[in-house]
Amino acid sequence: MALDTNMQSFLAKGEMSQELARELFERGGFIVFKNFEEGMEFGIDYKSWNVAPKFIGLKMIPPGVHFIYISVKDAPRIGFFHNFKEHEILVRTWSKENEDFIDDVSDSVEIQRIRANLKNLDRNLGPYPYENYRSWISLSNRISEKTIKRLQPKNKLGRITGQSEVITKEEEEAKQSSDPSKMFVVDRTKQTRVRYVDTFGLPIMNVKPGFEINFSEVPQITLADTNLKRAGIDSSERLYKLLASLDNDINEFLGEFQYAFVVFLMGQVYEGFEQWKRLIHLLCSCTSALVSRASLFKELLMILLFQLKECPDDFFHDVLAKDNFLVSTLSLLFANVEDTSGVDSELLTKSRKFKAYLSKKFGVGFDLPED
Image (cartoon, rainbow, N blue to C red; front, side):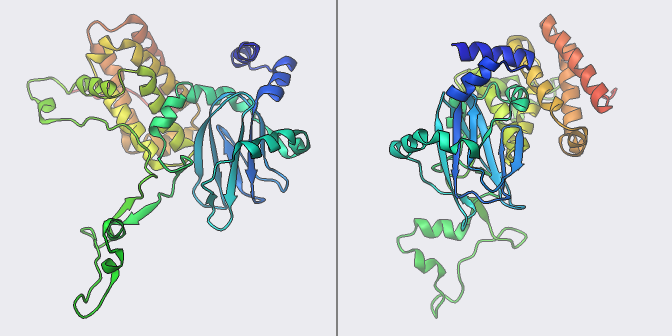
C-alpha cells in the first residue's frame, strides 16, 4: 500500500522521495537478458539506449504494464508488453543467429537462482528511467493485463515486430496438405511449380499464424449508413456494436486505442497506426454517442491530448497529419460536439480547449470548410 501511495505522489509532483526510491529497489521488478550483444538497441516504454558491454537488464521497474523492445543495427524493432508484479524477475534469451528472442520461458529454479544472485548482478543492471515514467503512464494507463492477453500475437512470447513474419500462399497450402512435398515437385506430369501471385505478378503473402496483432474488427459503413435522407453519417451504431463485442467495457476500448498507438510509436509497427486511425475515424464520425457515451468521449480527448502532446511537431506533420487525415477527422469531431443537441457541458468545454491547444501547438486550423 505504501508503494502505491508514494507512487501516486511521484506521478502528481514528479519528485521521487528517498522512501520511494528505497521501496522500488526492494519491490520493483527486474528484467534480465541472456546473450545480449554490445551496441544493440534496448528500450522500455518511452526510453531507449544502445547496450553497453556488461549490460544484462533493468532493475527497479515499477509494477504495471510496460513495453519492452530491442533491435539489432537497422533491423525492425521486436517488442512485447508485460505486466510486472512486485519484485518479479523476467528473463529473456536472445538468439544471435536468428536475431530474435528464443521461445523459452525460465523455470522457477532459474528465477530463484537469479534472485539469490541479484546483489552480484546489480552493477550490470540499469535503473528504470523514472524521468520518463509520467509520460509513459499518460500513454498507457488504460492498458491492462486483460488488454494485453486479448490483443497480443499468439506466438509463445507475444512478440510484436515491424517486420511481419510472412508465409507464401503456396507454403500455407503445403502445410495443410497430406503430402506437402508434392506442392513443389516439377516433373513430366507436372511441369510447373504451384505459384500464387496477385494482379501485379507478385507472390501472395500472408502473415504467419501467431504473429498477427489481434485488434478488434471495426464495423464498416453499410449501405444503410449512407441513406441520403440523413444530413451526414452517424457512426454511433457502429461504435455501439464494437463496444458490445468488448462487453461494453470502455476501459478495454480505450486500452486498445492506447495499445495501438504504443505499438506504432514505440514498436514502429504500421498496423498499430492503421488500427489507431480506424478507431479515430469511427469516434470522430459519431453524433448521438456524444450524448449517450459522453464519459467515453471525455476520456478520449484526454488520451488524445497526451498522445499528441508527446509527439514531436515534425512527427505530427509528417506522419499523423499525412493526407490531412487527422486534421479532417478531428475537425469533424469538434464540429459534431458543437452541433449535437444535448452534449454534456464538460465535454463541450474539453473539446473547445483541446481544439485551441492543437491549433496553437501545430499551427493548423481545425474547422470544417464552409458548405
